[in-house]
Length: 70
Image (cartoon, rainbow, N blue to C red; front, side, top):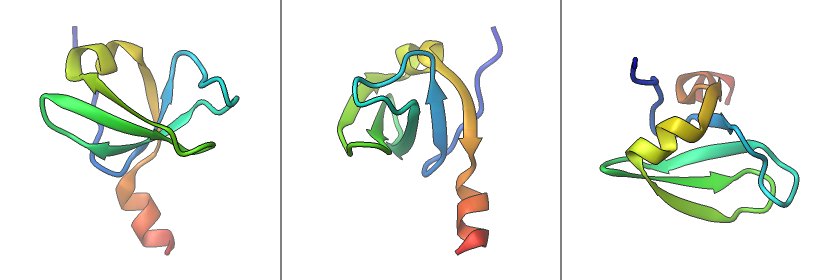
């Protein structure tokens, strides 16, 4: 299986939506575990990297794109 490409600050889409209704999460910490923060309500979740890669669908907005817009 090919590893998914993502970086710190990226907005990613997960397979299942958060109970608040949003499906977009911001990557706020990377390492052995990945911490993501809901863009809708601000709730953060810490997941093991392997579990995060299984549950992540795709990168919606890359961190580099966000910086160039600001």
